[in-house]
Image (cartoon, rainbow, N blue to C red; front, side, top):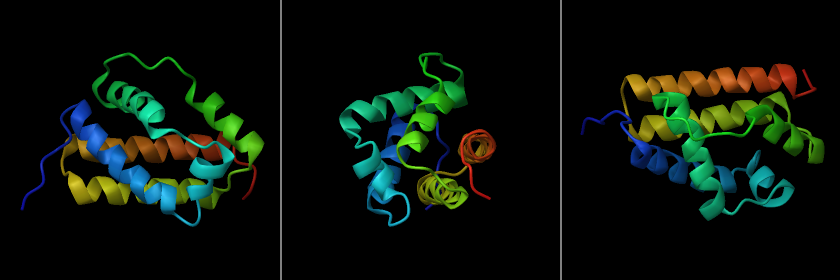
Length: 126
């Protein structure tokens, strides 16, 4: 079956619901979501969708500073380069399982860029 591209917020919801199913159970990064800053997906998912909908479709609606949010997490429990890489790998795997196309590729490219900035500005290990 040929996969369609990410076209809207509902498609993003599918990506991130599936991503969090993996991430919450992941041995390397799951604790960030369950122990460091326990997330309530009902509350958190709309914020993530706002971010990615704006990031990919320029819709507005996301007003937080992404780096400040992640700096707060790092202050509670330091992130490593490997943690960031695991997040990127899980997200890429999730996107590839569900969607194909220009927007799907852009999501993965933008996630890599965000991860790189996080490594440069927040993560302290080599």
